[in-house]
Length: 190
Image 1 (cartoon, rainbow, N blue to C red):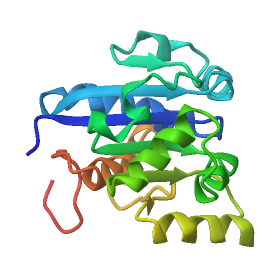
Image 2: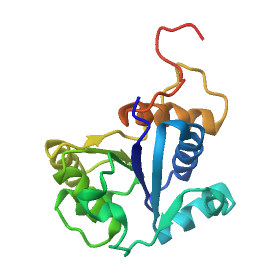
Image 3: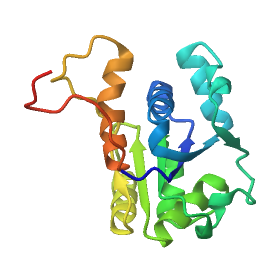
C-alpha cells in the first residue's frame, strides 16, 4: 500500500454527479492511504451536481480545489509526482481533447502530464450511445496508456440505493487506482 499516493480528481459536466460524490466520499474514507487529493471541477460540473443532487455539498469536501486555468497547480508538471488522475464523470468533449493532445485547461494539461509520465489515467466515461469518434478517442487514450472505465454499474451486489449502485463503478475505479478498498467482490461471501 502506497501511503504517499497523490491523486488528481477531475469532475466534468457530464451527467452522473452521483459518481463524483461517491468517489469523493470514498477518498475521504481512504485518507490513510492518500497523501493528497487535488480536485478540478468545471463550471458545468458544478451546475450538473446542483441539478442532479439538489445541493452544493461539493464545497464541503476538505480537498484542495483548483481553478480550471490554474497552470501553477502542482500537477501541471510531472515533477509533482501525482501518481493517478481520475476523471469522473468524463464528458466526451474532455475525452476528445485529451485524445487529441489538446491541453487548453488544467484538466487536459494534467491528463497530458499523467500520460507523458506513464502514470495512471482513469477515465470514467459517461455517455451513451457512443459514436465512432468517441470510440476512436477511447482507443487513442488506451493506446497512450490510459484506462477507460465506463460508468456502467453492476447489479450482482444487489445495490439498494443510487449511491450503492454508483459504488459498483467507483469501487472498481479505486481498485484501478491502486487503493485498498473494502468492497464487494464476485464469488466472495459478504
